[in-house]
Length: 312
Image (cartoon, rainbow, N blue to C red; front, top):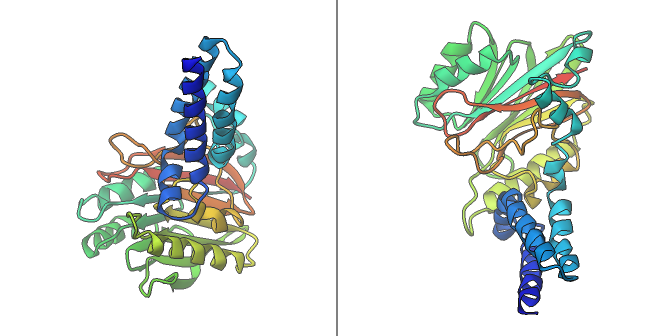
């Protein structure tokens, strides 16, 4: 009886924590970051409840269901196609179909200011086949390194503040975006593809710190509003959002755009590189056909790069 009571208390506590992940603000953002890992605690609790062999396992199902609902936006990225790709040696579902049409490959990485990694990151992302490369946390030295490394292969570029975009396809409509901050940490351009323009947003969201997340939340809300007002049929938003996939601050963006499925069965964590714990770098889209979404090391940054391919 004592064990059953303990399991019930633990189930209630876990459910409360998971629900707090839906609350905007630092608490919700923190829970959202830890949410994938909370699945281990939820699974362990259910296993213990089953071993007790009482009806208490029904109580343990409550946090299981709460976790599944809360983590849904991330789990949606772990599609059956991802498992098929993993079992077939990494081929991505949809690549064969895309072979008969146009593809747009985009890549994004926070290059970690002061790391001296921008040149190596740029070279790695060129080798990935990306036609559009977005780099964030650029200081003047990193911006110069990236520009030099990309000028031959990606001659069309636009940079402002800590963000920049380089493209092998022509760009137009370049605009800086302050997103409510009073200084620029985002930009937008139109990438001119043979199948028509794609509206691209690059963002380096403000950092998330206890009690100081308002700048980040403001930026993400403003970006969501900006995208909602964009009537372009094809839109991509990418960069360092400093927000996990289920963070409440991404609600406005997720209302307009979707995150493509991971190409391997994973949550696609991007930070820190040595032992990725959270996915805070993203690629969102609408109006395109997702073909690939992977993370790869590039340079010596503390963020993995995100590389995604889309068909028209």
